[in-house]
Image (cartoon, rainbow, N blue to C red; front, side, top):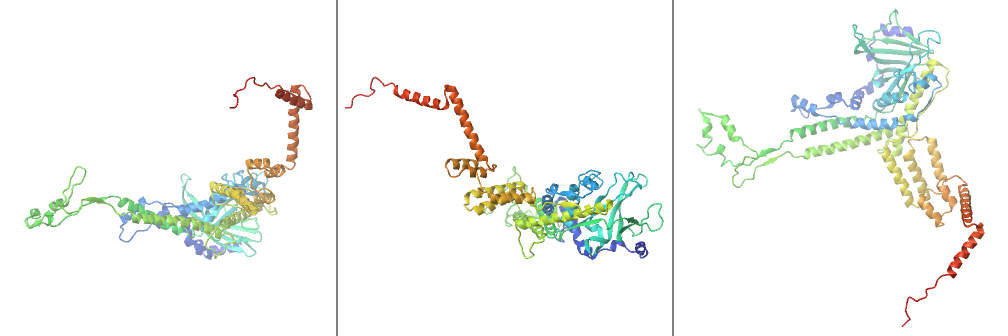
Length: 586
């Protein structure tokens, strides 16, 4: 291993130029994708172009100062990022490592020695890079141990940091496991400090060459000139050896960047928006027009007219000529118009070019949203290359593919973390959610409600079941586990009454359209509830009867007979009027 590093030094290899062929293929696109997602001043400076060669530098600079960046491509990618991130709290983690389980929730200085949780690290460091650059790496490192005893190592545990795609310069993958690296060349950026104050003043490049051989990992650092960096007090080649079975580096990778097709759309939008701003500002001034007749205009009159008066010494007086062309306008100034000519008026440029440009921008914005969804759908392993459209199911499959890549990458991190502490540790458990959605909560609620309402109007029992399962999927599918969702769908399939309204159920029971047992099942009450309710109702009637009997001072049956006898006596003793209220019939 030492001879291998010595060969690098002896041959004076420029490490910055020692890049992988796959790196060289993508490097041309990385700057465009990164600037598009950042959507900052660098994007404006790089991609805002002059209208034509006739636009001067001063005019172009003025237009650049009033231009804004229509960051719709960035917003579309962020929608995908947010759809994944909002479910990340449902991730299950158990790495069989106490330090890892504590660090992922922010204990022990977090996963990066800055108090960061794993959820936050994935959301801020991994997801944006993965979606925009399609590749991001994570190095699992360990602080240098202070001593040989357990007490000296107390509180020391691994930590992680990420590498951009541009900084993973070269690699050699193990043929037996394409997730393991035999050799790796990374680029770091470290601070240069001021000698007097010790404060950082600039970044400088540093290269890290790592190789694995016979269960030992060797690390060597080089400066920006590809010269070995030696630690203080060490002579010769400074090689750091790690007692690890493999290089502690995990890579998250997608088949393509979501910005591959839409970066140019944002560049086109930038130039259209800049053109519109310039047009709106420069052409937003109406100007005065007035017809004239050369035959009556003094400037074109007969010889000896007013035109002769501005000839001085054989030369034309341009000041006087200019005054004759000047027109005073305003609310307190009138104009004489020769007969037969149109009245003076103010005119302005046509808004049609601006309206056409705005319509085109709206079309580009819609295309960006469609293309991002199509790009997400294409990430699914089951996506068809011949399909030129997408549906909700393929979109969810693409989001799930992103989640699976995050799950696989984080499992690798947990394995490498464990390898620092225990080389024979069990495989970690990392489980990400299986379902994601780009729709907002309001959209999902509205669709779920609409599906549930449609059940009332369709007599098909199969339709009712499928519509209710789809409604549940819309409402809860992205918030519960797949096992729970399947259990709910099974209950719907087994339910005898698919849709019910409490008022309708009560009315149907009164009309004898449905029996109480079925109504109870439809309401989700436990089995045997109807029998208990009937017993409780009978007991209540009994208590009421007993209470009434006590009030009348008789038994339950006697009380009822006495009540009937009293009602009969009231009818027999009814008072008959002594006088008729109507006279004899005539």
